[in-house]
Length: 386
Ligand code: GLA
Image 1 (cartoon, rainbow, N blue to C red):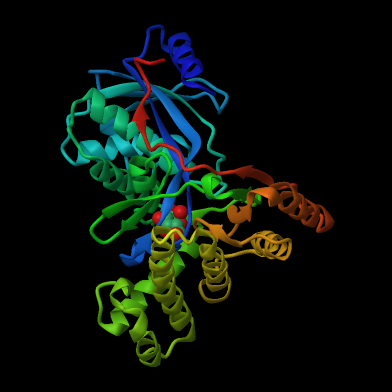
Image 2: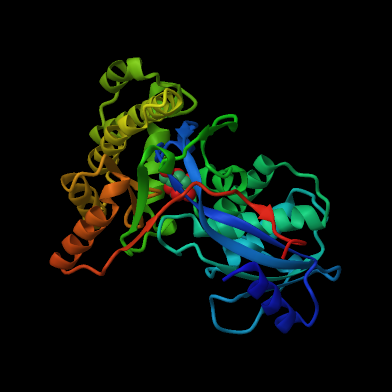
């Protein structure tokens, strides 16, 4: 659904034109998985799929929320009654941002919001970060808060961690807020230093396919938190602030100091994954784009065997695509379902997509959703152009 429909929906619902219209994208992560809560490196880019929100200010302490994607009336909440972990619906992502802004001392006095999203939900493509960021950007503009993009991302992460109750890192919100058209974002999650890396696969005769397995992932159901706790345990045992501090050439020595096999596997993944991000950045900067393929596939093996966050469907995508001639493939996002990315020669798009679809059909699985991902703009205001 486009900006015009969202604006018209707002008018029909609330009886007046919105103060403005904003959009924020979902993302895929090219490389750097489960590194963000270890102060490590990530490299997402924005998808063309976005959450679009029409928003107006209110001055009476009321928040009205409505999504075109969900049937039912607008939900009405009082700002002074917002309580962390009290809401298990989609509205928590939006109300959580308002809560986080107010808790940080920003004078937000209410809003009417109508939104719609084209980011597949539960597909590991950051549909929740898109919702958070679109609302944060809108309120930042409307209330003239003057917050920078990275600060909005931090507030959105706090909304998700504390208000929603999901212990996620900073990657998704930063990707949605800070990515740029035609680029992947090389992000150091320790200090949020950013480098925009040109990423134009089409110009080099390649494509990146996203395969949404349609297996729903859920971060707040425990496994994500367990991995995170295991990483923190490893860092504590190794006497460092975060696993980011273990250099790649110090990995063997670090592993020798750990006695728990599970913690050793988690540490090995994080340390090697940070290295893979650096390798991908170096290859892209050297113009050696095809050579990132095997690094992506190595990353998948590490997530599958060491971090153990893949699943049968994600492995099937990766194995099938690579066997059918893909340059590389890996799961993307938190795992336990969601999506995989597949790097392919442009000429092989149809054949590899077909091979994956046939493999799913042969295994009796729900047909996956396959689409091409192009690095797209980050969050932005859409009016008055609309
Ligand atoms: C989810 C989280 C991110 C990150 C990834 C794994 O998408 O929201 O913070 O941890 O999983 O890389």
